Image 1 (cartoon, rainbow, N blue to C red):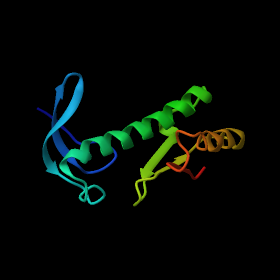
Image 2: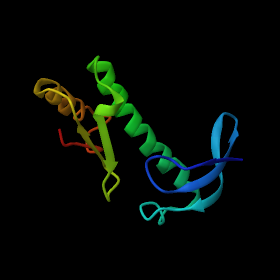
Image 3: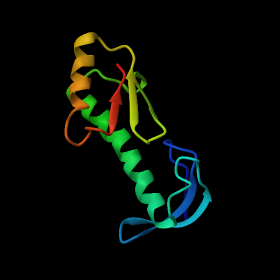
Length: 114
């Protein structure tokens, strides 16, 4: 069993890989944002949030060549919407990032606070 604490919340759980897919086996801690989820829904929700955070960063990086990880400040609000701030980024690039947040795959999931 692999024990994991995602960087998106304070949950801690154990999972095994079965047929190349993670399967939740044990919950060690559930954070307040996820404590209403069922055992079966927890892993899927956390993976979804983690992918959203990483995919938005990757999309910015693919669009703005000199964008760095240290410029990407993120958090999730109480509705689990991704809040993103960027540092060291000029106005034109901030507008580009704001536009990326309006792409269908990010729309209504990301708040850009540039």
